[in-house]
Image (cartoon, rainbow, N blue to C red; front, side, top):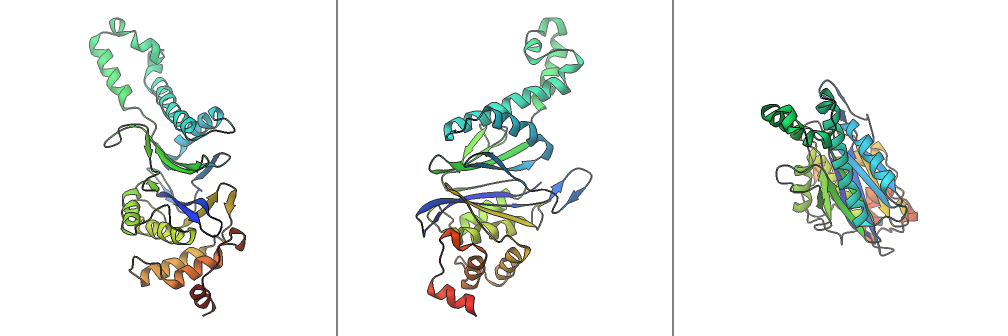
Amino acid sequence: MTVCIAARCKDKAKGDPAIVTVSDTKLSTGHYSGDMATLKLRHIRDNWKCLIAGTFPHHVPLLKRIGDAIGDDAGYDQIVKVCTDAFIAENKKLAEETILATFGLTLKQFLKSRSDLGESLYERTWAEISRIKVNCQLLVCGFDPEPHIFVTENPGGDKLGFITNCDFPGFGAIGSGSYLAESKLYELHQNPARSVVETLYTTILAKFVAEAATDVGEETYVRVFTKGGEIEIDNTFTFVEELRDRWKQHASYKIPEDAEAIILRHVKTASGIKPSTSQKSASAQ
């Protein structure tokens, strides 16, 4: 499993909305797992990205369907519909390949075959079909032109539909560490009015907390996006591990000044983010 996080925020120097994404890089199966095995951020279309959790190979046909169906100027409503349609189509394909291929039937043909198969076999087969679903979650984020975040997955449990809109509270998470990550983001009062620097700290901290969940790796991949492109970050091992050290030292709702200084050293000046006087002092120490 994994943890992937996306959060809306502001590049306050420019007044532009931004989205921070944070994820681990661990790939797990029933037989093996490894950190630094894969990057879980994928490009869908201009200004639209997604992060992946679940059975990793399942995302490949899903994203192909989504990419093929989305136009160049796709907005939120179209992307939501395309994602829903992609899950429905892949569920149908899996059912036909794993269950109905034995009978040489498509799903459409099966629905008309009750009398030919007999009541008992038909009901048993229908129960098996109902259990065949794409085991994958996508955390989709982008601009239309305002920032949007939503989770798309098969309904189940407390998920009543294929789409969960995360625009309010302004963040979302998927994977085995999602509940721990979201709990920490609520505790830290993360919201879309927060700056890029603040949001980098809260989302990375939430990822650290989520590492207590099953199969969440320690290696951390961070990106920041605006409508105009990507805010470049010196995303080295040192950047994340320095923040990990500060997190262990400070238990506070506020971002420690030295943590802000670390972030500002790694966020490129092209982003327009400038340290305050106190931050400059902390950087100089």
